[in-house]
Image (cartoon, rainbow, N blue to C red; front, side, top):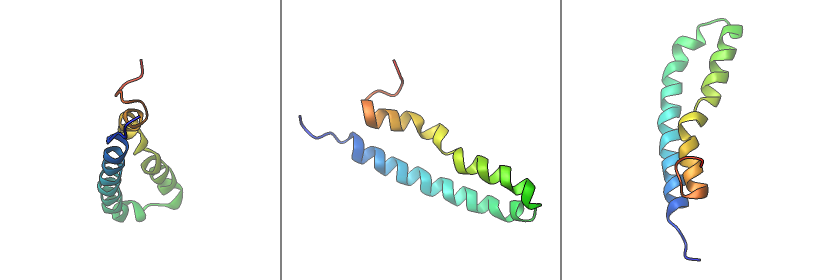
Length: 70
């Protein structure tokens, strides 16, 4: 089997997306940090897990070579 560029390109895409996502989350940190800690908790939980949704197709493509499940 010949090596595929899918995984290296996918990892590069993951790193770039997560870098941009982290910058956006840090930018959001200032207003959220002024809120009560019990209000901050759901915001940080959502931000901590929300990156998975847009990257799911990329992760599936890296693994299978298809963008969607059949």
